[in-house]
Image 1: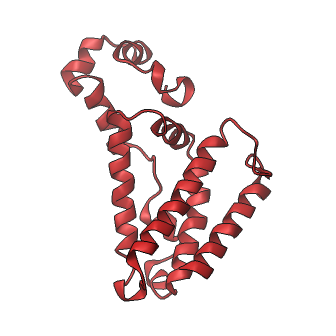
Image 2: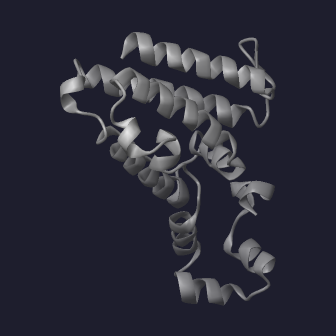
Length: 181
């Protein structure tokens, strides 16, 4: 329903109608729409897993230099997020409205970021604040472009609906990671 109709059309009545149940059941079992949304978010596959982002066995990943780890994570993130149409809808929705679902999914995403950061030896970081800022900008860029690709085709001359455009973006992310981190 979320992917098909968008978030503005999701309410207790619409969910009950879609499920073919009385809305009282949503209140009884989930304490309303917020509870249902939390439960749904907790079981959903909205964000890639740590293992999906590292893309190889942990033993191999941890032996890479920091800039290669970051490049690899971002290249895998581009591929992973693009395969999740509901996540793209959530990312777009987050930009205009904060609610129970976006807040809960933000928490899950932030926890994933902390998991990934924990894979980095603090000794590798020359400037932890700069590293955090750089990866935030890189993440935000991917999220924005992926969310926008649902409705626009070209952004700054790059075709977001073609694999070649995303290969360009991954190449730029790798370059930023290798040369800046």
